[in-house]
Length: 288
Ligand code: ATP
Ligand code: MG
Ligand code: MG
Image (cartoon, rainbow, N blue to C red; front, top):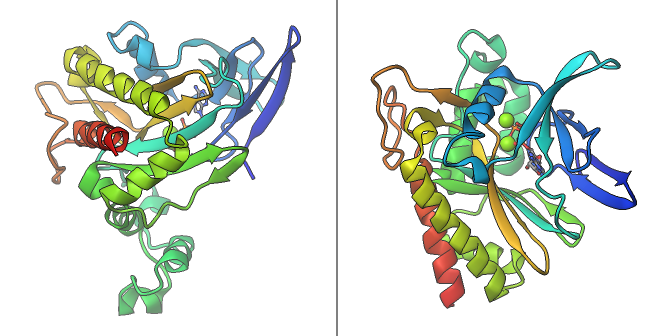
């Protein structure tokens, strides 16, 4: 049930890659061992390029060449396959920050009321639309995305579980996971409550926080809709920052804290609110 999945053989070593969350059709197997190809996005590539030489370099996938695929005529970025060194890993995609979307006002698809988003909304929450929205059978993207923030723990905890893959099973519907105790249950299940795995994750999160404080990149960018990719197998656990498609350099002279709520125009993303909640919840999960 994965959107994209591929198996490839390099020098006798098989590697299995799967896509957990995100839009379909943006990934392909790499031509080089340990690399995948992600559809080129100039802004994302710029961010990753800066990050390769930032103090956060160890927390992001390595990138390399830009390749043109002669078949689909698209450009792709060579990107380190973060699953490569694991054996049959469990994977979790956590979308981090209190704000998870940007509306492109020049794009009608993003500003006009849409029936597809109305249908997605009532599938999960039939009572949510107003009378008017019911009549129109359409809602705007802003309306849909703010509902997603409020109906999940994004708004309160500063992160939400996007998807989990465990034992070949992928779970995606975490719409209703709202409070700390529910999240804890999912983390326990995800790690089989193995303390040594939980501790490795916690250590990595604390380490990430320390590095973010010192990072020039983090000081100068707002990070919207970015994820932390959790990966573990029997032996090891690791976490990386991924998905910089909606990461933007702040206007000259603008400074943000990353640990306060977003208000129209303040550029805050709440990245550190999410990270701190994750640290607290992993800590508690270990203690319980
Ligand atoms: P979105 O629609 O969220 O913007 P996207 O197309 O930008 O999605 P990502 O969010 O970057 O894609 O990644 C989607 C999924 O692909 C992740 O949840 C993860 O499972 C997988 N993935 C992304 N980057 C890597 C990587 N470097 N190594 C291994 N898996 C990855
Ligand atoms: Mg994503
Ligand atoms: Mg993206």
